[in-house]
Length: 557
Picture 1: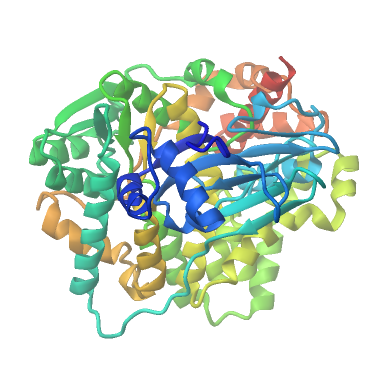
Picture 2 (picture 1 turned 180 degrees about the vertical axis):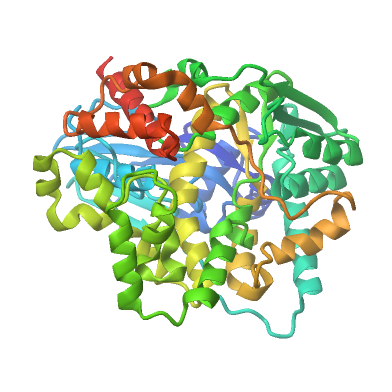
């Protein structure tokens, strides 16, 4: 879109939810509008406030603005990404060109693997921050903007927002905090229900998606559409919880039963994989998004609730382990963890012990479900491992840097998740799987006002205490949700990936590995496969390699 004065041009992916409020404010300052779109609001806001407009946007976005400059400023390209990282921004910069896109496949890039990015993927199951699997490509990190000087080619990347320090108000009790959280969730949902197309809710039956459904029912004048998947006969099938929530709020509920599921589901998703992602929940997400798209164009999800309010089992496990083993000398703990890392991948208890290398609270760093540094050394061919050298543990140190930003152990863990797995795994999964169906998924928990409240004002003990997680959300659930709903569960859209993989057999699984990078030791891959078929827990690792192979095959096409 070109601005009214013909000066600026924007290309934009996403939504600005508070564009109506911003438009009224800008009109009061004398600016005129030709459309009712949020895209024009971005253009006019940039004309009025420059890059400081970013602090005023409530939304998910990736955009670039061409600014022709003036007497005091050179022509430039200004580009930005939303605070949480819901929308992607890939770019390539050379001496003569600057390419940018929302998808890696749209860029004219080298097919050469970046070894350090591959190392991060094998460790984390995703490729974090500004890194990319292929040489020469970078990602703009969440909450950052860039300015490219089109005269000199100088590029500057800056952070425009960060999580607040945790400084809770000691006078507020849990009931008062839950009330504030509820008001913020309601207003966030209200903003995200504004659309000129049908809107629904992705309802897994877990606490986060149930609270979003409750808020939607409270603020919407029309019946809410809800969507879930069922796994008949599987222990992971919890569709009845979603049905209970849907019935309580009188939603129009839609269920997709997976009667004979298998990895063949990957064949439909595979064309949309550019950078690999090891999260197997991308499969049920892709399916439920397809179900939702038959009825609506926009859907609300529950992403972000775990990071904001302490929903992961890591938190209660770490607190319990600190009580149990906190008095053990760090050197002893490190020695036990190191000894465990020499065991074969998938042996029961191996990861649990190896994760204690940095103590109870750093398990989320050293206990990854994919390949720890010892396993990466086995999986990579000797030359590649030698080339990485001391950089082999760079993925763990990336997480450590985030961890050390917290004010207490729980604050450290939640900040680590918010800055790593949320933007670079969960939000990537949602964006790719939803866009494959042309479904727009909006995340009410990622409203920056709610994020700042949760990290800045909620004390850690109102997130997790002892064996109780999500304490603040549970208080809200008692007010909003069905009284007989089990709110102690942690449930998203999950599949029995270990069982599905075993059903493929050795030959089927190895066939899915075709295209893996040359630096991968296929003998070690086969050992992982055979170990998994024999009963070891290697499902996450094998799925990570399958997704890597798909990404490599796609990039060769």
